[in-house]
Structures are given as structure tokens and as C-alpha cells.
Length: 171
Image (cartoon, rainbow, N blue to C red; front, top):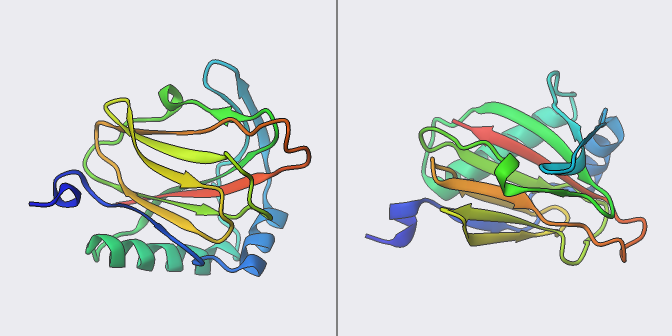
């Protein structure tokens, strides 16, 4: 038995979301500020009513996750857009633990790469997968009851940086 079979998939797939699709999603976002400093500082759009620009992206993300995990009955159950600007972060203890084994797909919709701006997936507190800020790329991670994630601090040295991520939970 492989580690992936025991613990689930965690992979980065490059060039999944086209730049023009990412720009449309960013432009249509309705971000609100979240700033409980012991949990995180970032902008969020909970995507309660996803825009038309998201429909083809959701389809692409579901197909990518199905191909990676071999799970063919996946469907979007939750989605949100996050934007991190210089000085922003999202801590692991703010992340909700998941029952079962849903698949989380994180798509980097940033306009440009931002060095050091990563998503860290942790199993029992230990980082087992890092997803760097590479526009158009996607992380596919099978979550479980011991997996959390955090979005690392965006350095203030990167003035004008904007990290935008679409986080989709599939079951």
C-alpha cells in the first residue's frame, strides 16, 4: 500500500485555470474583510451565489480532482474566494476539520506569483504538502479529520501583491 493510498492524494497541477478566467472571477468578487487577528487577516467572498464565470471553472476543478483521486462522483459542496494582501495570513487553527474524506481543490487566481505565499496542509500539525503561489495552478488534497491548512503570511516587502485563491470542497 502506498502512502497516497493510506493518507490521500496531495498534488499540484499546473496551468489549470486560464488567466482570462481568473481575471473575470477576481473582477466579479465581492470581498469583505475578515480580521480576527488570532485566526487570520484576509478578504473573503463566501460565494453564496456563484457568478456565471465560476461555472466552467468549477467543472474543470471537479474533473481535475476526479482524474487525480479516481473518485468519479465528486460535486461542489462549498466554495469561497480568499484574497491576501501584504500583511495578511490565515492560521491553521482557524481551519475547520472535515468529516469523511472530502477533496479540497485550491485554485491560484492571483494576477502574478508572490514569493513565499503558500498554502500549508498539515496532518496532525505537521506540514505534509506546500502549495506555492503560481497563478493558474491547482492543489488537489484529500482532506480527513486530521488535516488542516493555513495560508502563510504575505510579506509586506511585496508591496502591491495580491494572492487570490478559490477554495472548493468536493464530496
